[in-house]
Length: 197
Image (cartoon, rainbow, N blue to C red; front, top):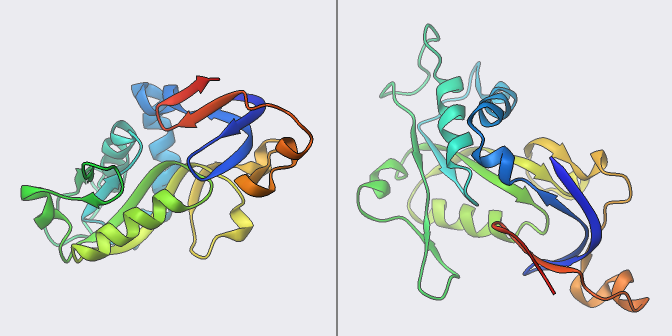
């Protein structure tokens, strides 16, 4: 995981460090190792039918499905299959939805939500609302990186947290210490990476 200190803005907050997760999401060997770690809470007794991948985590999601449904392990789901799907945004980028055959992979299915980074929780909230709308049951949430784990209402299984990064801060845009001290923004952060200002 590559960590860059600075003053960054996301669509919901200001953060003191940019966490570059792109290699973790795209390198097959690293993604497989991550999946092994993230699979542990689901291996013994959790029924998983579908993994919903957000923020380009499909490679990790596929390996996570493989780890949960290992050869020789008894299947805990009814079909003996685990599907990996990704919702789409509508035209204005706000509402998540599933299309076509992906809808039947959510409706009535035990679902794990996989995100790259969880800081403000807005992306996770949208995804949870979307899964609920289509009748899915969320049996777990996993993240590669989780900011402020102590503030979460639900249990999140994370590979890394903000506690692993000294001095990591997430701040409301209107209450940012760095803005108040006159420090200019370094970049705009998204799930794709960052754009310097």
